[in-house]
Length: 441
Image (tube, rainbow, N blue to C red):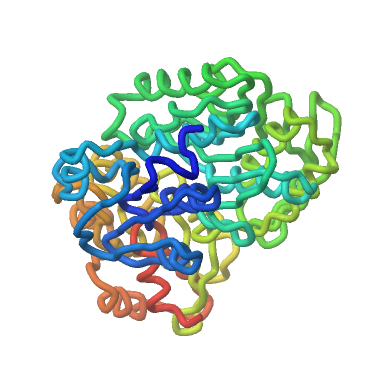
């Protein structure tokens, strides 16, 4: 084992423990009896959850790291005082991705889900297939499933995880079944171009025993695979689609033969793709169509994935994690289909490099919204860059308005709101907490 209960006698320290993945990994080690502690710049739902489970968390500056091993995120490195102090003290330093790879490597069966969009939902759907059929498993989820949270710890031999392409972290995983949902270029700060990205996906796939790909994605389907899915191509397809309030029912076909009809509870047509991906991975694990149906229909959704968080002046507020142009387009279309009025779009760009490098794509999709509100950029790990700023983006979209704080957001929303409208808040940064702050729940 990479870690044992007596690992150095001093345990493991997490730098940035409040992140969704870091907190899940911290919980995983803690449940194994390994002493775990950590710090983060600010409190949040995951730091509160860890503290409630007895895991010490420091908010703000930490004076000293006593542990032998330090786990850090991609946003932390040389120059961070705690990182530098730990390195100078000769402590073992490992990245979040390395830790995930080591934990996954201790399980005989690893299912990993990769792709620019849909990783969290598909990972959750897969988890519900195991859970709904009484199969013990452990899940590391890059979001909050409404029922399972961001970590589910079982006692079996199965490990289900997201596989993120950021900084090539998914290459730390060796999978029994790897799922590739799509191959859109998103992290332009990590990959030179699409060819560079596809080389990484090819390596990720080569490290798996079996691979599932989206046959409707022109890049993903070029990768060697055991099973593929899609609405228009692939061995596994969804046919006879029907929707009620953007909740889809469809018949899953396998090699042209109907297997089972599924009725999803999650909102949005994109979840048909996610469900097909989960179906394929589960089939490769030996589940029947009816068993898969049971799990898929138990899945209720994920926080920040088309989540209704309340109302604002009587108008419903929907939040979604969408921060890539393709995700924004799909989420906006779903919102337009369920409202009688106008979709009032609030978008927070996530990182300057993404906004700068995909500027034309952002302009193209956002100009289809009526008077979109562009909230100040969530910079994450990056320094200010006007070329990729929310200010510049707003200036290039006809009718768009830039706001930089919650008070101005409230004013702008009230300027044109009517009772039949829907407020759609998009972004992967702190816009979620901003929306929660102004919504009446």
